[in-house]
Length: 366
Image 1 (cartoon, rainbow, N blue to C red):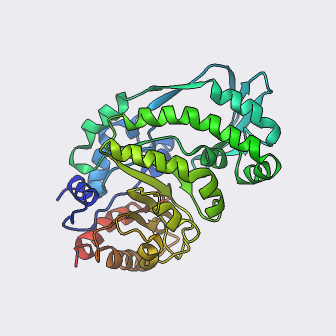
Image 2 (cartoon, rainbow, N blue to C red):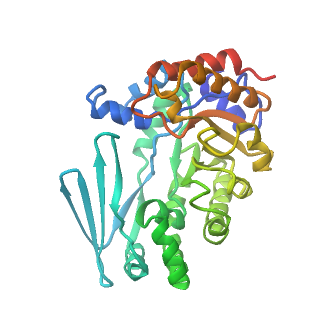
Image 3 (cartoon, rainbow, N blue to C red):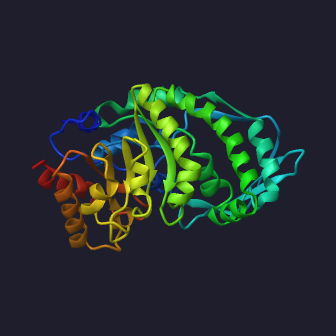
């Protein structure tokens, strides 16, 4: 069977010939492009899919939101060295953020969040009440033609409004203080955000995507059951249902600790929990994933921490870990072997190829 046939069989509740192996190579590819080892347009080209094929990796993820954001307000952007600034001008005050690119890691991170305190909430509500979206399906259609038998087309919905603030616009510390200081105004702000996010989510569900992800980037030491139940469950359950009504399959990205939130997340009815990290990097052995999730129909996707693809881990430990993961995964057709969460820039290419070899040897169902 091809990677596409395997994942389609699993999503339909059937058993493929072996455990499917799918990996997120986007971060690695970004580093190769930055170093000049791959051409500038590589990640959007058919060669990108061929690269997956040559490495023996199923393709599914490129971080693609199938909509464009339109702001009906004044926006200023500028660059100072490796720092990227953005300022939004509103009648209720201006919001400014700064993200710094780190050449050593080929990534950027926030050094100044857009939302810093409860005094910024009125301006944020103005921003989202003046935000609209329009479909942007051209690349989805192009990618669908490129994939062939190597995988499946996944697109993103927006994060839940709460997680959008935690991950991108405020950070968990500021969100926690805001919830304590102004809980009613915070809830009002989330309602304004959800009203507009729902429109973008509908565009995503109606896109050519075959499967759809709410890219929450969850880790249970950051968002535990209390925040999840109060601020996230309703959004997720609504769009998991809408994705199912469209005849497609839903994904949630959960790439951190699992014990404090896995059962709650699985109970939303989501089809796939993706990028799951086992111990010794995560907090839950893979043999305990199914019992902790407590939902027999949920597909559990992950198993190989990104750091295992680097020289920090020996070849012997790498093989041992992947074989142990496969021993669990081949016992029942509810698992996908994946990366938790991305293959890093300093990966050893032969390790990526080695996974496919190990799946061939040890990934057949019992």
